[in-house]
Amino acid sequence: LSRRQRSGLCALRAARLLHLPVVSLAAKLSDLVMDWDTESFEPDMKEGSQATECAKVNERRFRSNPEKYTTAWLKSVRDMKLGSSRRAYAEAAASGIEIMFVWGDSDAVVPLSDGQEELRELFPTAPFAVLSGVGHGILIEHNEAVSQLAASWFQHGRQGLAVMSMLPAMAVA
Image (cartoon, rainbow, N blue to C red; front, side):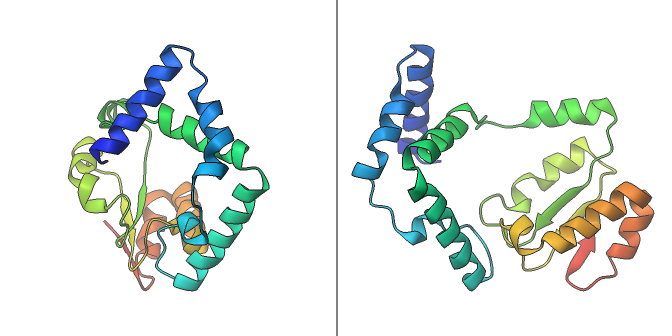
């Protein structure tokens, strides 16, 4: 995040601690002061026409109630843990829960390279299913592949994933 973005988040959190209704005020003013266009709502997706269609849907939802959606977004960002999620991942690893990671190799928002080494340290045996040419919009663009991976994982564990890795554009490590 940029310095300006971090400062904004700190201000949101400080306002919350002081019980100042900054989120409500910002939400009320957002549609008046922000210059929103369809591109503002476009997700990180490989398929341009699908991204544009998602952007139109997102924009339509936002414009139906700008105050509601701005409030929800600001609260989500305000309450998001921006630092490392290492503690949460370490707790999950210590619990013994079996975990599978599914990632797109073209994710520009959260590139696999940013966390794969650390995740591999915490979950040395967890499979990583990497879909080729897929961005951050993995659940929108490739919901069938993710569904198949999840079903195979839940029903057959690693053996099911071994079969899935034979599909084109998918690698399971």
